Image (tube, rainbow, N blue to C red; front, side):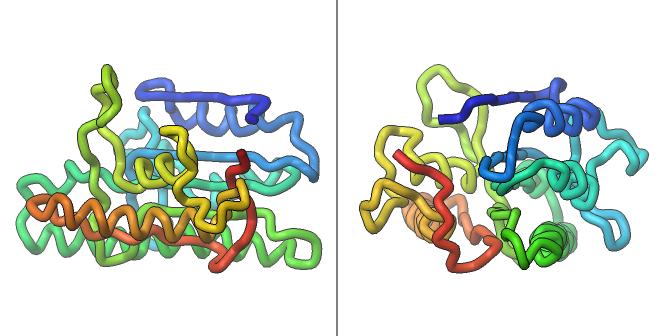
Length: 229
């Protein structure tokens, strides 16, 4: 079970609140703890830097959260950090010309690769002690991240395909479907494979939507447990 949960939604999710809550929520962590950070929203690029877009982001890039800023904030927390990022919004593709979509796909490729690189390089710093980051991001470089209407009764918020696959595989509806070896644990690799296959199946069931996105993972083939029941 999680001993301390901080939930920021909509206009609560400002840059200062996100960074402050990383510090306060995980303040009691020690080297044996596992801390989870999940972000669902927009991502953007400026030059060679990748950014997460908080609710109060303006046209000034310093109001966004760079991947380096996020890693710096998380690196102060002892123990292992699990990072889930669902950062592409399907509305960005509505009404866009083909050229604009292609440009966005290229930006998305770079954005996701920068995220994986930032956390994998941070992990190498601590290679002799522990690999402190386990990361899942929502898509591959040439693909679009999709957002669909919620299937939960009474919940009218849309959800990212990546997020729904992650939640379904990790017990949100009661069954831990990603636990393919039935050891009462879901590993990072099992979650990665489950989401990948879940998206493929969803695409087959909804051909009119054309869902094509693959989750990215760091490190690969990891048996690290992210959910236990």
